[in-house]
Image (cartoon, rainbow, N blue to C red):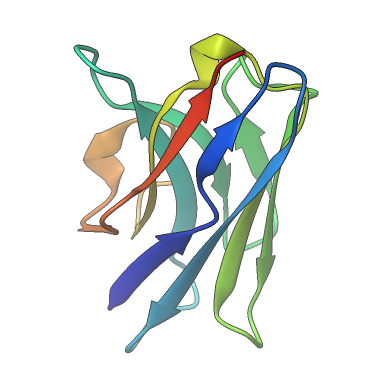
Length: 120
């Protein structure tokens, strides 16, 4: 399985971005898809997950502002980000694995990341 993110960029506080993650190769119906992010000097943290049954979870810091979605026919996962704040700045990674939590240990396949910068 290969993952590739796109859609990052620079935006002012209060703005919006939509990240995309495409996957190729064999997948399993019970795998979870997730978005993580990592700011300079900080650990990678979970942002949102999309379980095989359609259940979604979000980090408290992004609830109400970010939305994760999946299009299985197109092999795509999206992260819609609204009301962006400077603290949302970081490299955003798409990941897949058996464990559908906001912890990195549940994922064994990662994309290369796409940079999001929120600054005035």
